[in-house]
Image 1 (cartoon, protein in one colour):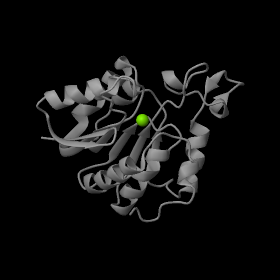
Image 2 (image 1 turned 90 degrees about the vertical axis):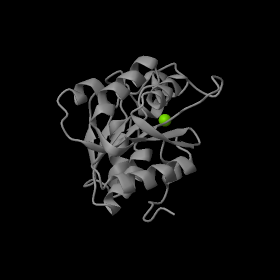
Image 3 (image 1 turned 120 degrees about the vertical axis):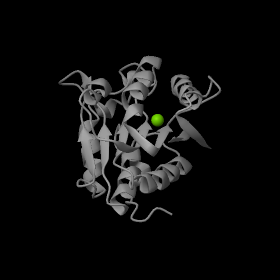
Image 4 (image 1 turned 30 degrees about the vertical axis):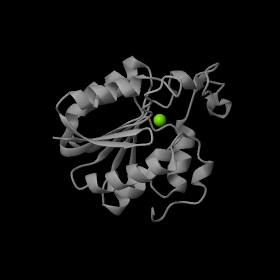
Length: 205
Ligand code: MG
């Protein structure tokens, strides 16, 4: 259903269900007509590749924002820590190397523009209106709120806001993305398009 999907997508580290990948692809492809796509929280580039394939098909661009030092849950001793992505010489997580390899292997170097920075720093002088914003960054309430507040204002009318990892049940996952999703739903700024698995999708009015 997704043309030109590279071999070995299931080998790429990341957390994205198949139906969510398809929904991201479809929305990114349509929203590219309105402006570039911004992804917040690229990790090793799995979702970035789906967005990138969509944007390539629509002559669009993906800005892939991530400081590549891992979110809270990726740090040493935390549940989602992956020792392969830990740079012992720096004493820090480093997902950028893996990210670049995956984007290059997928042939998307000319579609995906990495922005290696924190959300707030990257947003400070941002002036480009966006066709789609995909929030999949840090899952602390502070990080998720910052991502929403920094980037929601840059969405054009008709643009898509997608939020990953929405779990009503606290046993299934952290509650910060859900809190931000509810905030967006209640803001009056969006039409709620609904849910695909843990992905919430809204359209800017
Ligand atoms: Mg996620």
